Length: 399
Ligand SMILES: Cc1cc2nc3c(=O)[nH]c(=O)nc-3n(C[C@H](O)[C@H](O)[C@H](O)COP(=O)(O)OP(=O)(O)OC[C@H]3O[C@@H](n4cnc5c(N)ncnc54)[C@H](O)[C@@H]3O)c2cc1C
Image (cartoon, rainbow, N blue to C red; front, side, top):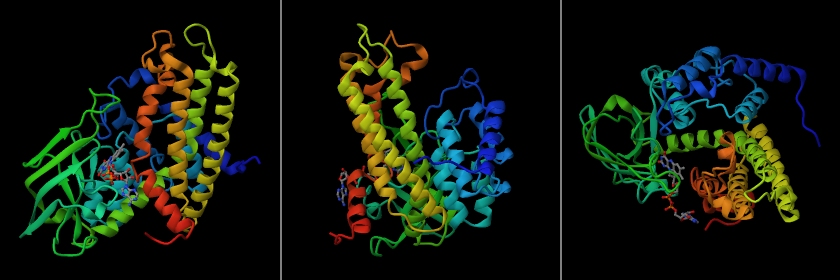
């Protein structure tokens, strides 16, 4: 089977490619590194602003929100091109793709103007305050409390795994506003300015890069938040959580489906580049089998992703996102390990002196393997995806 697009869609792709060719800042202009998922260097701010002004930031949205009312198929093409060119659309993906849509869905007009538009224009960045030490998969178990005193909420508690919190301007923070209510009720969402007194962020060093933390613990001690920063209705935060997670899943379809192809390209580069001593993985029959199997699985994930995206874009529910997430993230993890093992000791050398400089990232399979665990946890762990598949796709009884 060969999937192809009609002429109009290919014209859309050409226009997008021409835009990227003309305007995407070359690597030598991207000198300031991206420290965390909420740190936006100046070159990235300028780039995102240009995307916004040109209607290429969120193509499916109207022009006033940085889009061009693109059709679902055009949006799919857009994401294919982003992945192919490895274009950074935003250096604060959670702000752009989870928090902004949530504010547009549930926020007041003033919040939309002040926060959603400023995020789209890369003027501010965000962190997402959901997880807590005893509330991850079971988000409804969150205990960070916000007590309303007049026109202020006073927040006390702790978040964890908060990506980019040490660089973010604001936190989209899930808090308990009615401790007496059942677990899923009594939750609200507050926009918290991260410079408010009483907030302490403690970066958590990561195995993959101990010098550049992205995760944080965030502690709130008597943090005063203006009541006007409440998003949606008081005690109705659970529906916002559902909406935010749906936006997170919305990001997943095409990224997961097309991202695997990019990884396979990297595998081929590694396979055809001689290892120290001259051995090439491409000459190893067993390794060729591994690549062929991964290719077939990646195609299955891609087609599943396209099918799910088509359903979602027609407004249908598509619980297959759990299949896609599970298969995609587990395939990445398994493949990284297989490539690393096939490379032998060269696979452990994350900074191989003999690897061409522009290929170091392609060769660092041990690091890719360590990083790959995060995909099997973020956005719902593999076990949670299996529960969803069992209950909602296979129709097995709930536990
Ligand atoms: C890269 C990355 C970025 C993240 N960024 C953020 C962020 O910015 N903001 C934020 O709020 N959070 C963030 N998180 C946290 C993430 O949402 C949680 O790690 C995730 O929800 C899992 O929660 P947990 O770590 O508390 O694990 P737990 O929920 O405690 O789970 C522990 C283990 O038990 C299993 N388990 C739990 N419940 C069940 C069940 N019902 N059935 C079967 N098995 C179960 C899990 O699969 C897991 O193996 C991020 C995580 C990662 C990896």
